[in-house]
Amino acid sequence: MKTRKTFPIRTIWGALAVILALSLAGQMNAQPTETTRSFGDVRVLGTVPASTGFPEGIAVRGNKIYVSGPARFGTAGDATPSRVFAFDIDSGALLTTYDIQDEDLNQDHANSCIAFDGEGRLYVVNLQLGIVRLDLGTGQQEVYAAPLPNLQPCSSVAPGTPCSPTFLDSPPLGNDIAFDEDGNPDGTEAARLHNDQDPIFPYDSPANIAFNKQGSIVLTNHAFLTMIPGHFVVLDVFVDDKESNLVKP
Image (cartoon, rainbow, N blue to C red; front, top):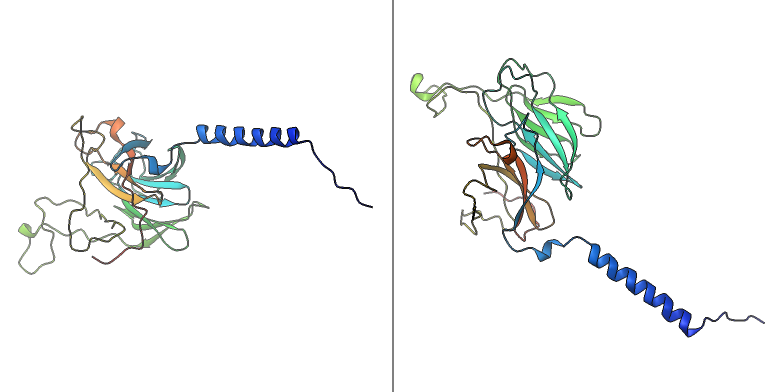
């Protein structure tokens, strides 16, 4: 004959009290969720090393945010290669630095924008090399596409000659764009984010954005006019938008 093991009521209530206490403690120690933030709430998530500075490209994959730079001219002879930085998506800690290989550091060199393909490889727009494909696991790099042609200013060439509508002759450096959840293909402005107290911070020449899938956009601060090292940061701006697939403009 089988007997059923029983426990005193006091023991059961005691165990339930412990479980409840642990649950409440966990909730009290937990970080605030994105839903507790108001629209436009902005905080510094991570800082790009000043030796590179001028961040521009940004992309999110898994639990990491990838940022590229420097997106500027005047880098010839600085002995510092263009770089991609990997930050922790929650803490903002700098986890990994990828130096772009095979640049001529005696000439202007720069990184602009970045994007992932379906296999998780990162594509970097580089001033000298063109499009560099970077395997984040192995660090292997290869040139995926040639650089953009360096067209002369239209004012200095004959009519009908391919040219650039610029005043000065400078190397071409590509840029990019990101769309929100609704697409907004007609160009309607849905909201505007701006500095409230400090006229040059937190937004100091903001460059590129990416959605972090948690309701925020992460944004690179270029700071190309002020050149303040402390402004070379990645911002986390809550916009209550988790992004959907890209749409055509």
